[in-house]
Amino acid sequence: MEILRSNSIIQPSQTDFLPLLGTDYVEFYVGNARQAANFYKNSFGFESLAYAGPETGVKDKVSYVIRQHRLTFVLTTPLRTDNEIADHIYRHGDGVKVLALMVDDATNAWHETTKRGAVSYMAPQILSDSDGEVVVSGIETYGDTVHVFVERKNYHGLFMPGFVKWESRCKPQSTGLLYVDHCVGNVGWNQMNVWVKFYEDTMGFKNILTFDDKDISTEYSALMSKVMSNGNGYVKFPINEPAEGKKKSQVEEYLEFYQGEGVQHIAIATNNIVETVSELQNRGVEFLKIPPSYYETVLNRVGTIDEDLAPLQKLGILIDRDDEGYLLQIFSKPLQDRPTLFFEIIQRKGAKSFGKGNFKALFQALEREQDLRGNL
Image (cartoon, rainbow, N blue to C red; front, top):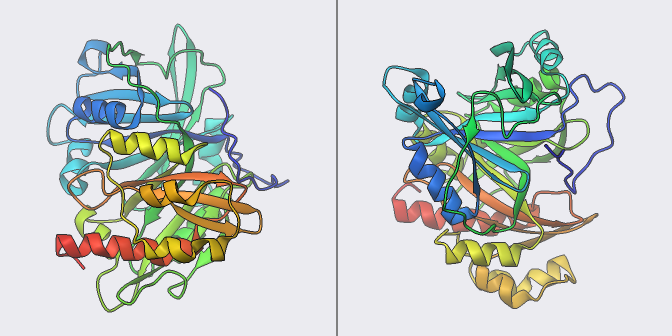
């Protein structure tokens, strides 16, 4: 598998005890994996990759693996009740269970993190078949979310042992989604710094950006956020917590409907956001709507950009700039009926930040959706 090379890279640390090579895959626990896989294929342009289930000797669950460029999703459903997967879906609805991280040594990754205080989710184990072996291990993080360390340098199969090739005549065209840029977690009141310390102490991450309730607020609601990054910058986890406001914030709404802490959104990189978003909208993906007034002054704030403004305004794409360049970003509506998980589509034109200048417009758009749902 090709190693993630994002545009946002920090120089490697000489003392990085947990060298990460990028995001290996994201696993979702869902109510109907077959339908979910086909939704992501047809709406987002993924290809069928691999399958595990009763036909492959797995009796308690099914998993469909889909891929687009370096972006790999696993959709997993239990076949019976009274198990951890079924309980997860009952409580949270469809949501992210595993943020899997690519490493050279999964055994060492587990030892280094657990000896620093991380709770073990999975002791190191070797999975093997005729294509070689994959070593996996894992630790727990916020809510019911886990990190699985994946070592696949001695494996040459499609995905990993236990899976077979998933053949499908449904082969939609790619929408240009490339890889995971970052994953954002929502945690409870006064829990942000707890999890910042967790990532610092157990995984060696650094806090590279901090946003307080003055940075991320509107007339009605606010939140705080800290961006955690590993040593080489390949893996970034912003962590949000609610802040006091006149009304319920988007983080509070998420925590209420997800019934706990979890992954709020996955930011996915593209090299041409206009083409990607145009195709996604044509396939039925819905995005937050940005008022026309945003575009009347945005170029005064961000300066010259390569793109024409009219297509960006038509699609609702936001623009922001930092010292390194600028970025283009847009946020989908929730991907399921519960107002929880959503996607961000992002194109970086040198910028390494996260769109601070767009926070107010984004929050106002989110609040309009909350108000329509009666949750503001």
